[in-house]
Image (cartoon, rainbow, N blue to C red; front, side, top):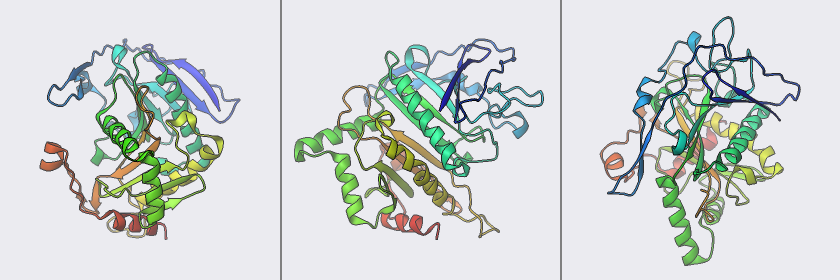
Length: 349
């Protein structure tokens, strides 16, 4: 992997990742940009102890631009974008409209491919491996920043999720605090260790592999399964068989196997809901894909894993977080986990 550092016109960092060691990425950013001026605030909710980020400047961020004005496509034919190069493989840059900035963390955008109409599932295994390498690099770099407690790599896909840019991309947040879900998982794992002497995530993986009816697919080093108490209609957790705290600790065998398995999962999701009038073709399924990694402090029991889920529950119905979910965080799932796993197993048949 070749890593090339660059600067955008307003001083933000841009990083190119290439499989070709001879790739040259030296095109300058010719846009007349002012320096980014964002001052998000962190406020603690006294009733729950959760940190809330106030980022009112994000109201002005780019919203559903036409394909010809996409800021994540390469700069070509006189159209200047966030990527000055005329082509790229994977590009990462500081978000121009960050939720976290300065002393309150950092937000980065990860462009998976220069192809505007593609999706992650359309990548080759080699291209998906390059994205994994980029995630790993950024996890290492951002974890070392002063004040960063947790690095969170994720992808939002689809208008139903709230995505404002159609180009295939993800994001990375470097939080100055431990997020609420991570804190809950850490507390549960600590309690499980105290009660059993074992690691919670190792037991969850072992239980799923033993039950088999919740396993979607598996390899030599990874298993994808629907959790016993899934919150979302179709939710899959992907775990390495060897417990590690974060992406930087995966070995080469685990890294080599991941792309094929992950691409297989994404393609299964895309075949869950046929396109109306075109039942033979896959429907792009909206999803959130997120890496859960151990925080800098207090995360000894947390295990690296990826959680992939969709808000779609039928071809024409979405799972809305209404009264119970939004009001009390008490989830109600309309699809049995075992049935969801069966459908995903059969999706590529």
